[in-house]
Image (cartoon, rainbow, N blue to C red):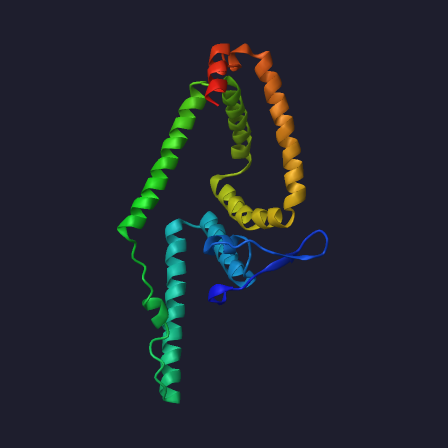
Length: 222
């Protein structure tokens, strides 16, 4: 492949090797394309979250920063001594990282802000639709989800949920990728059952149905 990038493969259900889809740098970590890098990120993140759950964020940030600074200073001194003993001139050991361009362009900031604003507006519009019962079936579903969340909140605190979400982020995508066909089959069955139940509820509750004129107009628009 171009640029000397690696191509990863896995066994399918028939025992044959299949090329894995290309992923971005963040997705590559989540999908464990490089086990070493993903393991380091996952372990460091999990330890950090566990520390935050036991200590204050300020303390965790201060200790992690001190540990990082101690490591970089020690490595810098070690490399300087090694170069002096071996009489070499390799330069600064972190030269490549110091030359990285970390500045954000105005275009990139505007793009990120535009995407964030679009998601926020969509989220607010959806909440308004659900709370003001534009569609009674969707509002009932939302109410059931909120009711489930009351039990989730009683069982777990916020930090525990964050840790579970982080672990799920590094496990569920890979599990889905390795078992995509069987998971999709079961998800399709669940979706069909939910759709069937929802249609029955809409028929039983007239307020949840569209008016005939509105339905006819929507069909004409299609």
